[in-house]
Amino acid sequence: MDRHVTSSLQLPAASFQSFVSVGVVVFIPIYDRIVVPIARSITGKPAGITMLQRIGTGIVLSILSMVIAASVERKRLKTAVEYGLVDLPKATVPMSVWWLLPQYLLYGIADVFTLIGLQEFFYDQVPKELKSVGLALYLSIFGIGSFLSSLLISTVEKATSGPGRDGWFSDNLNRAHLDYFYWLLAGLSASAFAAYLYFAKSYIYNRRKSL
Image 1: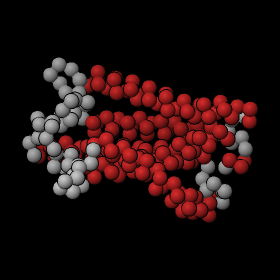
Image 2: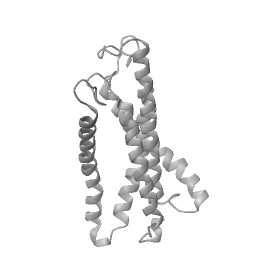
Image 3: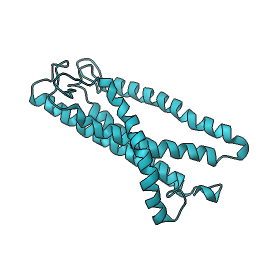
Image 4: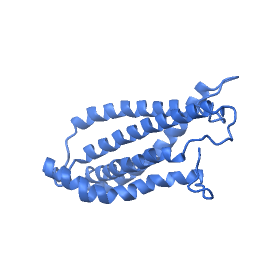
């Protein structure tokens, strides 16, 4: 994609990951000063929304970010076809890299809801004697998530690639289908969210102040 900011300045591809952190930094004060007071006035709860509602909101936003990512990647592939760049993987597709910005920022906002909610939940809802265990369980999410992510990528690569066939993660991104993978992630996340709603509805908080 076209990564030029000016005619002489070009953004490094890896730098876009930093926009997740930008989304977090920008949204936290907005959440604290605007979202929470509005939610508090509606629900009458000190925290505005419960921990489980906060986590659920983050999951929904992460699903939306995957839907946006799939749509943008689909547009990029169509652009590559229109300009005859399918078999030129090193060529720059005439499409601005800023199309990627919304999904990164939205993912950062999702982190504000989900990660903070999870940290509060694992710390607040375990018995007093097991606070350190609760935080350890919270941190274990990242390790387990990374392992499952690697396993999913390996499984998809084996299932979609083969002799004379480009897989979803082909070295030639113009023949790959990262958009399919993003849709798969959105579908898996939606299924997980449905299960989350089922269990969250029946959850009883250990302390009323956590509401």
